[in-house]
Image (cartoon, rainbow, N blue to C red; front, side):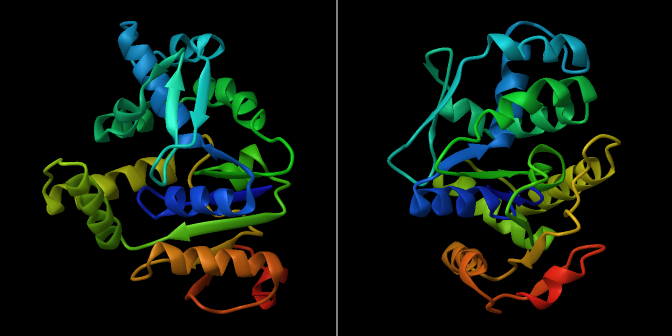
Length: 237
C-alpha cells in the first residue's frame, strides 16, 4: 500500500498513476470519487450543502476505472463514461465543496478502502496516508509552489483545448489550499511518517524515480521537507 497525498496540481495523480502501472498494482484516484459524487448530486437536484443527502447517493454509484490510451484512466459511473465531466475544472470546485462534509467523507471511506486489493494499491488524494490508509507501507506528500501548480494546470487545460487565465488559476489554487488545509475533518496535512517532496521545477518522471527509489533504498534526487513531527524517516532518505 502506497499513499500519495498533496494539494491540487502538485502532480500526485500523474505520478501515482504511472507508479501503479509500473508496479502493475491497482490505482485509486480518491479525488475522482468526490467529483463523481458532486456530479451525481447536481444531476439529481441535490444542493451540495446538503451533506447527508449527498452522502446517501454513495451506495447507488457503480464506479469503475479502466485503463485509457493516455496516462489517466477512463471513469465509468453506472455504465456511463463520465471521464470528461469528472476531469473538468468545475467538477474539482464542486468536489472541494462537499469534501469538507463529515457525512460525505464517512460515506466514501469504505468505498475507498475497498480498492485495496492484491497485489497492491497506489492511492492518491489528500488524506490517504492520514485517514484512509494510515498503515500504508510508504507515505509520500507531494507539494509545489502555487505558481508552479498554476502553470501545470494551465498547461493541462491548454492541451485539452480550454482557455484559462494564469492569475485566476493561481488564485483558485490558493483558495482551495485554504479550504483543504483548514477544514475541520481530514484536513490536508502530511502524515507524521510521510516523506515530503517539493516538486517545484521537476518533471513527473524525475519525481517518479525518486518515489521508486524510496521503495528500494536511500537517495536524494529532489529537495525534501520534513513532515511535521517526523523523526525516524528523516535519516532514511
